[in-house]
Length: 265
Image (cartoon, rainbow, N blue to C red; front, side, top):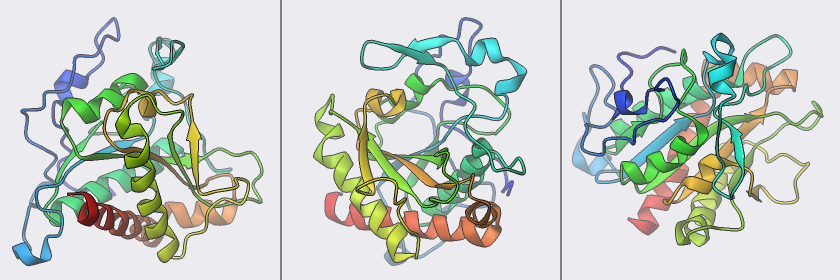
């Protein structure tokens, strides 16, 4: 799934310093543009021209190499502190959440770019530790995007309850975390449902509010964290790691973004 050169606007500014005090993203830097890609469709076929999007692949693959750095406490946005980056979940045969998140995010960024959007990713590979969860949240405002989508997989223990969940900050700490984020979540949920994906039945509604996620708490743009599937469910995990399954996710999320942009941009 490694498609061309992976770039990150302001990647150097997001690298972990020795103290883990990450520098803010440089909004003047160019957006993610896959190697050999770029707007190749006629303008009429580019429904996302002018839309600025941040894609956040959850977690990162290098956490185990430096657990002390990964566990370094950072603000959670509500007066508490959390680990810079957590491990994430994995399937029973070892397919990791951070790998799934990066593979889907990279394909999603490429697809959105081809439809005319300007796209930034919070990390450019799956081998590091950061950015820490607080800086993932501020990334959206630092790069002045219109929306941010954070890609994850579910870690619900009951492997018999597959399905996706959309998460927004709650109670909201800013105007963008209220109705704008809920509307983005509903649009993404509709895209997933139209593509045949089912919401996790352990939750009452497919869109839930959480106060414990620093990425959501720190974002000042419409932002949704998507737990796209249950990696502990063997059947769903097999679909999530397949090229066909990942492409379905990308197309579903793209449809959701296009629908939201049509109404808000």
